[in-house]
Image 1 (cartoon, helix red, strand yellow):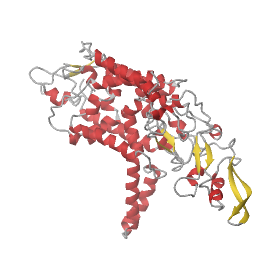
Image 2 (tube, helix red, strand yellow):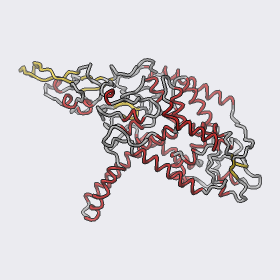
Image 3 (cartoon, helix red, strand yellow):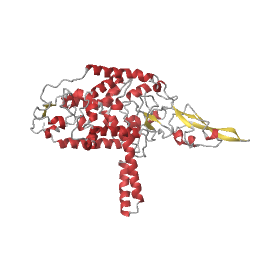
Image 4 (cartoon, one colour):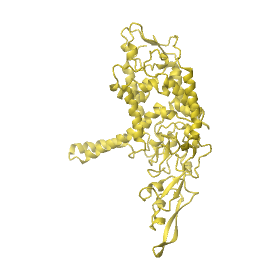
Length: 508
C-alpha cells in the first residue's frame, strides 16, 4: 500500500478544522435547537462509550453508535484514529513538532497507558469513573472551552476595539465589514469566562511541552484511548511488514514518532498507521497490506497489570470515605436534566460541552464542591450566571446521558435547586431599603418570589416595607435572582440543591 503522506496531513487538517467548526457552533444562535451535530467528537469516543456502559441506570447506546463504528474500523485498519483523526494528536504534530529534539535518549513507558486503562476500567466498574480526566478528546475540548476560546475572544474583541478607535478611515471601514462576519461565525455570542481556565491551560501546555522529551509523549506513554485502540489494533487486518527494525538499518527506531518498532512494545498496537515510514525507508522494504502475518505478543507484566487493576478497584471505596466526598454540599447545583449524583459522576466525562453551550454562562467546571473526584464536572455558579428558563441545550450536547434531554415544557418545571434568602444581607431586611430586583427577574409563570407588606421599625419610626418571600413550590432554582442581586460581594439570595427534581439517592 503506497499513500502519499500529504494526504494524511490534509485529512488531519480538515478533520481538525471540522471539529473546530462544530465547536464554534456549540452555542445558542437564536433557537433552542442546534443546527449541527456539535457533539460528534464524543459520539466517536470509545472511552465515553465505556463510561456510559459502566454507569448505573439505562444508557441510550444508540447515541454512541459512531464509537462502535470506530472500534470496528480499528479492528480492520489498526490504530489509524490517533494519526489521522484525533484532534489532540494533530495538535501535538503541528504545535509540538518544532519542540522535538532530533535525537532523544528517553525510551518512554509505552506499557504505562495499558496499566492506566486497566486501572480506570476497574475503577469505573467499582463505582468511580475517571475516564474524563485522561480522555484525550475531553482534554482537547475542555481546553478549547475553558481556556483557548475565552483567550481568542478576548484578543479578537480587543483587536477590533483598537481598530475602531484608530483614526484611520480605511482600517475602520475594513473593521466594519469584517467584524459582523466574525461576530456571527467565529466569536462567542457572549464573552466567555470560566473558572479553572488557568489550570486547564496548564495541563494542555504541559502535554505539548512533553514533546520536548519525546515525540508524541502522551500518545506513546499515557493515553488510555490509545491503549484501548491499540488492544483492538493488535490483530487488525492491516499490518505493517516488517514489524521490527531491519538489522542493517534501524532508521525506524529514530524516525517513528510512536517508536512502534521498539523491542519493548507490540508493534501492531503501537503503530498508528501514519505511513511516514513508507517515505523515509531508504530501501523501500516497508509495506502495509491485508496479508495475514504473525504479530508480536503483548509483553505486559502480569504483576503490574494486577496491581494497577486492584489500585483502580480500591479507589472507589476510598473516594466514598474521603471527607470531601462523604457529605454532599448543598451548594452543588447540577445542570437541569442531570441524573442522580452517583450516576452523574459516573457518566460525565468532563468534556465541557454543556459549559460551552450554556446561554446564561452559569455552568463552570467544579474543583472540590462535589467531592474529591468531581474535578471538571459542571456545576451551576449562580453568582456568575443563571440557567435560562427556556433553554434545553445542555441536554442536547451531553454525549453520555449524564444530562438528560428535556423538552422546554419539562425544563420549565425541572427543579435544580431552591432560592434561599439571607436576611442578614437582603436590603429590605438588613437595611430597611426597598429592593425589587429578584422579583423583577424571576422567570416562572407565577412568580416564585413575592413581596409581603410589613410594618418595620426604622430608628424610632415605624413604616411599611415590601419584603421578599420565596414560594418553595414554584421556585426551580434557575439562579437569576442570585446573579442579579445588587448586593456587593456574596449575594443576599442563594441557590441550594434542596428539593431538586433528580433522585439524590446513592450519593458518593
